[in-house]
Image (tube, rainbow, N blue to C red; front, side, top):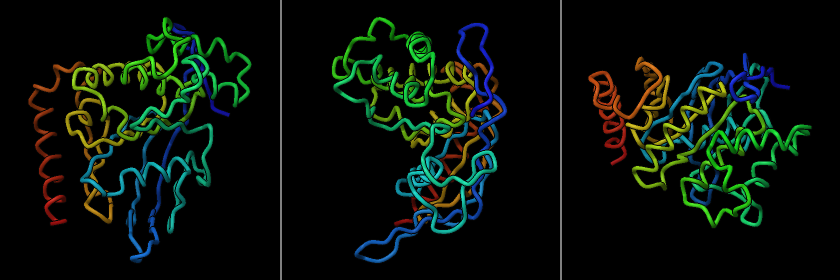
Length: 271
């Protein structure tokens, strides 16, 4: 059971003192008709409770595989992944996932989609929990709409609300804004940071967008070309709270330059 405290401003429980992720010598190998493919190679890392960590790297470098191991969807071939010192063996309510496509149930309303998690975990205040998250993502007026009646950005807000409504220790996000238009994507980034600052959960966010990673993160993990491994761990000193204007600051541009050089070198190595 997560340790939680009541947030005085919103009334929503805020997860505390939980959500440390560690991987130790993590390796994932897939078998196929053409032989074995090493998706992750000897990956060790620590993500501290409440950190917002972004994972960057060239296509096919194992970013999503790393996320899926932490989620419990994929088993390690070697090594292990741990959440708060306990080996991750399968999916659990202590971790929630948001995908690039919203993955909402089309036959359920916005409210019913968000309600799935709280009801499944036995939240006796499920209705109140849903009300809080509808307000936090600004969708109270759309609670009785169905997913196909919403814009892409609104669908992803529902997905984020649904993921947070179980009060997970860890929120895993696999390029959740990649399919959105530029302006909506910027708004969703700011909205996500507000939720994270309010909620306090650990976030692991996979993206191909360097600017997005710098804007959101406390740390950026840069991965090599396949087989994937972490080649650089960059601490992000940019102050919070942040607005999109921070992208013109010298430190932002310096971090971007470092990231781009590493990603370019790794991408070129595959040709």
